[in-house]
Length: 184
Image 1 (tube, rainbow, N blue to C red):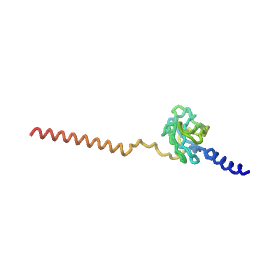
Image 2 (spheres, rainbow, N blue to C red):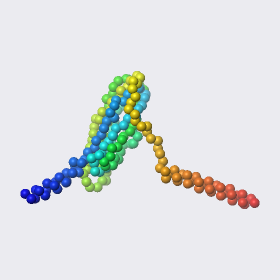
Image 3 (cartoon, rainbow, N blue to C red):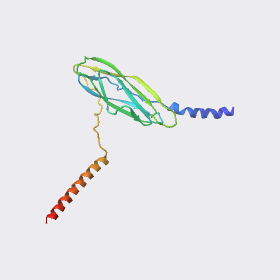
């Protein structure tokens, strides 16, 4: 009897990593309304709030003939305990008929390669709805999604470029000064 009292807490502790494993994925929500040849931004969220380790997620879209471009290329590395916003752009071809198009996407998350020890995570969320309504003229605005951020350079890179320019200008100044002194 005493041995089982000690084994039960140990068994529960061994199951803890499996209980905490879980990745949540939201859908873009509202129907995206487009005219043929038009594009719009969308977003969804990958949640690793219950995880104790990072995951690597690959996103696959089943949206032909529409073109999807994500701001962050797949696969995406997501740390533990985070809500990661995935932003993208959907474009409709010019030669497509109006109507409601029910498309989908899948998110497959797993433990990163080479991770040592602990529980391994392998989750696939498939057939997440992605609805696009093609209209001849838009009747409403799509939900606001921030524009794709422009590539920003880290301050250290900007500082190094400025320092290099200053050094080059200083060398040119010294060369001109030496040239003037040699003429006298």
